[in-house]
Image 1 (spheres, rainbow, N blue to C red):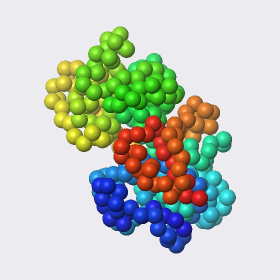
Image 2: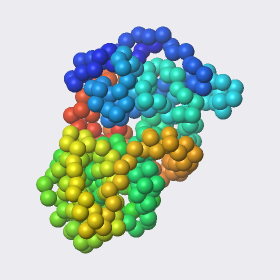
Image 3: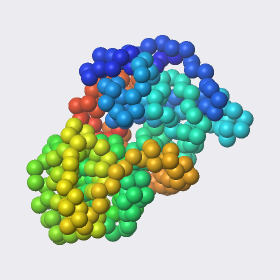
Amino acid sequence: MKALRVQQLSDDLSGIELVDLSVPERGPGEVLVRVHAASLNFPDLLMTQGKYQFKPVPPFTSGMELAGEVVEADSDSGFAAGDLVMGGAKTGGFAEYAAVPTRSLRRVPEGISAAAAASMGATYLTAYVALAELGGLEAGQTVLVHGASGGVGLATCDLAKALGATVIAATHNPAKLDALKAARGVDHAIVNTGRFREDVIALTDSRLCDLVFDPVGGDVFDESTRCVAFGGKLLVVGFVSGRIPEIAVNLPLIKGFSVVGVRAGEYARRFPDRGDRIMAEIAQLASTGAIQPHIDRTLPLERWREAFGAMAAGELIGKVVLQPG
């Protein structure tokens, strides 16, 4: 089978190769899946560079999120050959076949394509844990979403709107503003370089934002501390800008807001029952059309370099999906 292997860590994709491997043998508690689609997530790119929290030792097959068809499963797994499933693990998705832990798989909701199913898990899990579980989002509140043109950013906008919020989408790239304004779930779009607080004041009639979703860090975090309403929450999701910011604790004290760390995958692992409930709710929202992943492009696995390069260059609006078959 074809598989995308990280042979060695590199900052320029030079350590990655598309190779031929044997079909993996599933271990205890695993399901063998024929992969129909696998989506690229920012942690996939970071893992090729050794810059993610989870650091697999090369060589390993990249890809943390997939959708496909069950080939083999234990009789007590709840799955059978031919079932359409979605989910994945930390690695292994960018291949024609993957052995996936049973607990990491769910059935594909009725009417959802393989590409959409492969694009829902990681992004919408992050969005749901941030907004609903930790943020306590209520209908009528205002959410500022940074990194809004990426897969997790657009998922957060989409989910926030489905939960009844007013959504301000923010990007560092002015060329993406029109695309953001037209995206699902977005009420307003702004550029988040410099002093964007004035834009937030104008859009909220000086109320500021109940929740700020920040996967960017750096200067964006610094300015975001000035955009949170009293009693609001600044949700720390990541640091794609490269700088991990610091905050003087008198700011959240005086301004009356909370800084909340979001590790959605760890949250679901520590509280598996809650994780199952969250994914069931996401599936329900998807099956009714209330949420829908935004897919920038779908490519054959052989064009993996284009996918990784577009993500590294910040060219994507939403998700990119690779099809092994």
